[in-house]
Length: 296
Image 1 (cartoon, one colour):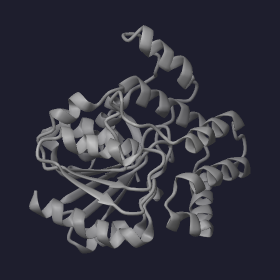
Image 2 (cartoon, one colour; image 1 turned 90 degrees about the vertical axis):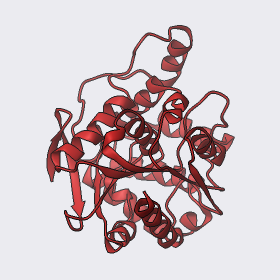
Image 3 (spheres, helix red, strand yellow; image 1 turned 30 degrees about the horizontal axis):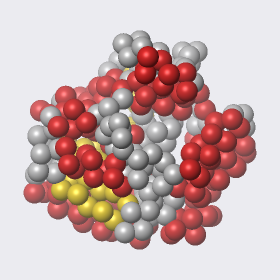
Image 4 (cartoon, one colour; image 1 turned 60 degrees about the vertical axis):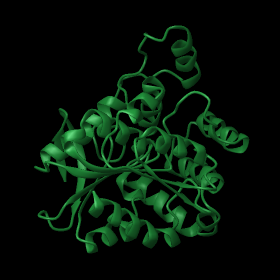
């Protein structure tokens, strides 16, 4: 269903009993709500939670900023270094955090447990820091503060990112080919072995909505927002950080940095998990997140 949040249309799915405590799931860069596995969603519903997932702006079925140009990442990084007050991005992660709060408003949810994956965990840091009155607990998964000095993606992943950007897929088939090549590098060993499942999900997402332009604007938002460590240091809600040992896109010291900067945060390092949500890890994630939410 479509709701109006922060002045734009956002596609939302609402699962479970509306009277149960709410868990709001925020997905990552360029990724649609369907990448939250239904086994995960249904598992949390069975634990007694109302679970909401949504498409961020510029992805899936949510509002698109058609015709609004975003800078290339190299140009933007250069500009940020030498002209830190110059804003080249059409929006930043703070705007996306306000979208998230707007989803809560649209669904008449006063407070929610926030779970964010990758870029969603970055948005979640801003929600937890700047809108703490709306947050019961916070769980970032495979995310980062983006602070200077943290390790970046390994060389093979950086190479694949550059190749993907240069490919400029103009059809669903081209996007599927480049997407599969990239996911095979960043996924866990289990995820790589489930190639048919990865391809089916990716094809479903591309057929649901194919919109490469949105990814460039979302990347610009991440770069524009920059270092989130000061925001993490201001988070006071109960926080649990989950990260995989095999994450080659956002290495686990980045997740550890969130935990180190949020007061009394708990850090769960998951053996063998890459930059994905492997099916074998989902029952454990359901248990530990439900436990964290109940404790909060």
